[in-house]
Image (cartoon, rainbow, N blue to C red; front, side):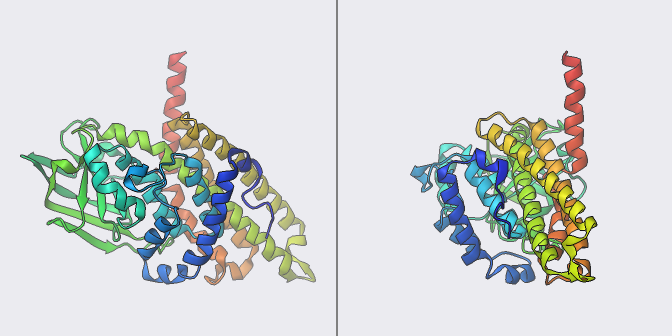
Length: 393
């Protein structure tokens, strides 16, 4: 295996503490993920022990303040280390589950009021409570203005009705942040409500059968007259849109970090394969076509590393813009699909066999250009900003 691994420009972003943490993450993957990964893939869901074990090892909830049982460390570089290591090792399902809990949902609870933080953060940080967020609906994808799930205020409660789909951790989740419409304004009419497991009227549909990331449970959720206490509302009524927009850049950076590391891992494993596999009396990697292709892929992965490292440094400094996060997200996920496609081709027929890791990488990669905002939506965000910048001149 290449000694470079995730190295290169990424290393300039990290300090000694992050590298020590990297060793902890690698050991956790070997002991608590690798032996169980195939079982989780067959079951269609990771075991809840993934969260509690990660909590015991300090892999989740490290941003939770000390008074609620966390480490109180708010440094996204630790989050990035986890996504790099899981991505490089090829355990995308487990990475997605931990990323949702750590990088996507936790920030909403960190920004909650004091009573809510005391109520929820201790078990979220320990991994005893699994979280999810429900935005996407059967009739609407990336367009938040199209959300139809509604919540009607009734005294000290909201009455919630609607349906969500493609919800990551939908089977495992104990707390689901639901984006609901509380007014008719397209964006300024959305509210965040936290729905608890077991609330009457809250039902989980089937665990959706995907072409990849089988261990990541993805579900349909329905809400029929669910009575949600006002005390479970995050922020003010009709102000969800600003919360969502504030947290999306971090989610997209997380995906970019994982995609870049996944591409590097797939490429390294392919390099091993083409030096060991022979055809016509020589290693597959010795053919000019193979060398040229590998050179192209290695160059593109290094370019992605450099750009993502710059975005990571900007995010740590609270300077990452939504537009740059969108650039990183679409470019790295499209790159990942190209890398795994070309690497599978270099494996020949064996690449099509599920016993080879490249086959798993191939099917796991495809959704990354879709979730977190499709490539097309990312380009729309970037293009809109470019045109607006001309108007501002």
